[in-house]
Image (cartoon, rainbow over all chains, first blue to last red; front, side):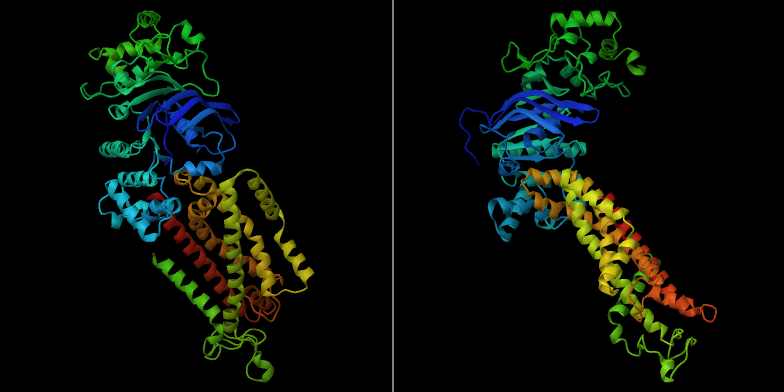
Length: 365
Length: 274
């Protein structure tokens, strides 16, 4: 494991842009993302489907396939840019320095290979273990990810395991060579809620024990809350808000973060309460809207939002970065909202209705 | 396994066993012995204890000719399947995995071979080499069966290469070659083998058709198609020499299809459980 120079971040991403060229045009999946991650810290990336969070993670891992993908910018890992590395040079990082846990454990294990070989295969290659040592290492790994009866499980095929078990195996595979950076790409989306909790706790524990950095990609704000040091909210391929998780939840400034928060169903509300969905659809990434990408769906939208793209800048708290002209809670936002409500703008009206759960409008919409 | 599949599998085992061990079967007549020339038999005999299925118009034992004829049919089928699975499977998986220019180049060649009339190629090769033995026939038919396997393998490899476990293998630093041989090809094989069963049936029919046209192995070597062709002349006198090899053909082809379907269902059940 490479020694990290004290003080310099483990991963420093600067103006990363990933574009897929398809017949219909250029899909700008990631449009200029910058952030840095220190050794041993966790970063949560939150956003809805198509916001570019997975593509961002895969771009840094260099796992985007195909000749139609172009990635620009820099992603410095331990000080050296991974985006300019050759595939051969990437192999030195994959597994040993950077690893990834995928979204769907049903498809991320080879269906024809027993658990033992899935776990030990690259162990043997990277660490030059013999069969017995590799087997022992596999047993230890499976025990570590809390798989009961690991000796028996080593002989199982993936289809003989439950979803949660498979994700544990995937985590064991990813952790096998002790990476210093782990990407978890929606690791719990395909799992039952009860299992989700266990898997997230497992990831947190491993992250703490191994002092590795972790990037947790999810569409669920509830997943990052309390589990990550920092949270980055992405929308349409850009970062709209980036803050320490605690201060983000205490003081959500971006209308999109607020809308995501509002759309979480609450058990305290009566049954059959309409979900507070975000009106409209995610923007077309071939031809993104001018100005703020969220402006067509934002209840606080004003002329400046449509015309000028807000830069990601520090707020009064330097750790809290925000890209918005009318941050939630500001007088400008309140004024803009009143104006939009008066004008009958759909997204403002929808927010107004769901803000008052007692009204009948909240039920039949 | 349903009872029809059991029956079909048994038939295949019997026919393959008989073809392989034909020389060792006690009491099996010499397939080329023409009894009537030596005064111990007649042409177009009915089934009897000496000739279970009777004799053909050259007084040769039909059962023996069917058993030895199975060698030709099965060898050709096996050669075609083997070449198809090995070469077609490899090239198809390779280009489906790496894509790009290799893919375009290989698929262009494959399409040309597919478009080329097989009969013409066979005739050309046979004429150029001046011989028509089992090796030549099996090689040409085997070569012609590579393209369909390439297509099947490529189609499967395309989707498998996009599966998460291939990306996961990359993400832990597996070499491309190992990914191809350990992740992609093993997952392409089951589909390819199910296809091979059905394809073997097609090849056996193809060989039969070629033999009927007189383009398969040279007489007196028997093959099921050759037997039907030979019996054609005396069809009005005795239909049995034509019917027996046809029945062998029908049973074998049906069995291959049936077992192939069963394998495919097995495969789809398993992928559904994944």
